[in-house]
Image (cartoon, rainbow over all chains, first blue to last red; front, side, top):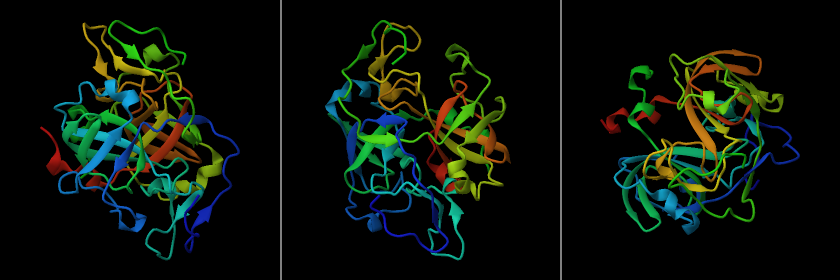
Length: 157
Length: 157
């Protein structure tokens, strides 16, 4: 809850009293951005800067089979985002939009999901392109992306 | 940690001692599947059965702007999956694969991510196709999918 004040038309609700589940941070993400305002709105899996996903050695065996994969889905915890905002005004416009209609970091569970290109693996580090988060962001999950996940025939033009 | 025993070649590690972050369940997902063995391996956003995402009324204002959207990304908590397995043998084969090279529910943070087709909204319920989870699965997040998230020019054939 280190975020700034609400913008015009934004609204927050009272937070739940208790947690429903625990997350374990399984590593950290190293990126070039040390200030939130410098982070891009969305990662670029082709031309974005190389970022390093540093996995906690506890989970190193779970990497078996990642070699040779090109595209991964990364989940990470936007630890600086407040969680109680239900209507947001990302562009300081004359109206607010519901949090679930945005991919903003501000959400009840501030988990971001990005598709990245895996460039190489060194030990327990994955070097990838496509992230958008501040340096030292906590890592939540790494998932493969299979071709059938794309469902090209169902894509909206 | 209600899962069955490990299969051949599977391996687990000791779990972390403490939580790093708290999740809030923001709703529940109603599906036709009341037994894990009946769940499909992957949802079908075109022909799968209609499932109901029931949002906690606390977050109802965050739905503003979802009307008219066709595709959404849903994050949910696979509450029955054990979290300590690093190598898995999903097909009872003669080897195991690393957890991060699989989209299995068993993972350190058992958060599933599916792309769904939004059919209609009624109050705080979203009726969607494309889920694969057991009835009453906890809801973690709802995100829009924008065309530029698809990055078709970067797709692997």
